Length: 188
Ligand code: IMP
Ligand code: MG
Image 1 (cartoon, rainbow, N blue to C red):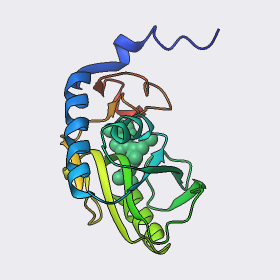
Image 2 (image 1 turned 120 degrees about the vertical axis):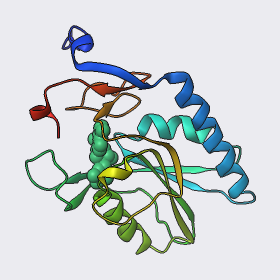
Image 3 (image 1 turned 30 degrees about the vertical axis):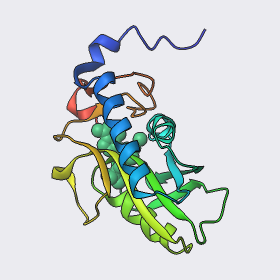
Image 4 (image 1 turned 180 degrees about the horizontal axis):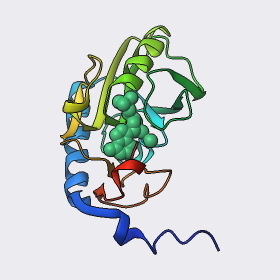
């Protein structure tokens, strides 16, 4: 038996911000928009592990075009959970980006430091085009000027979990996106 993750769910997971139906509806809309915008092309959808894995899996199935997929995993330097701005690649892409229409799939755009780094890094690999789709956006938290081309939802400054988003690697499997209720000191 593994760890009992569910015993304290009620305690740690608070108000539902976006329920599963709302998320699924919006993902289908994003897929339709991307399908229109990329007509005649075969976009290459790169999921940023692990947070975007669930969104990526749903989004690719909402796109009515030939697509290819890849994944990249990043982490920030330093022991703190707070984003330091120094990003390192933990798992690199399998394939080259040269000449491809790349769509980077992110779970949440917060300070923007991760995305800023990744965009510079991926741009240097010579894609034909490079755009970003982020499921969630916290505009009030931005520390660096960076924007996504497609955004699922703008949300207020709450730490949220579910639908791929974690707190200490937990709660990624929740179908809803909810506000974390733990004490402020434990939040990143
Ligand atoms: P940024 O570099 O500050 O934009 O950080 C983005 C990353 O921080 C995301 O990909 C998430 O992994 C994480 N993150 C930021 N806000 C939240 C949140 O509310 N819940 C879960 N993870 C978050
Ligand atoms: Mg994370």
